[in-house]
Image (cartoon, rainbow, N blue to C red):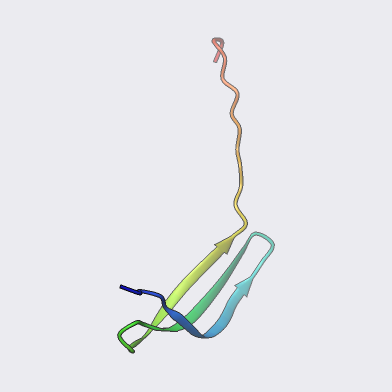
Length: 54
């Protein structure tokens, strides 16, 4: 079963240094339309060093 959604339109709500927010209108496999609220973030990594003294 193909559950692929087709993006019909995209509206950028906010674009900052860390995140972007957009609203997509999509066409569902059954022909209905829906709204997707998307937050984009480039990702991050954190390292915490712990030894026996901590």
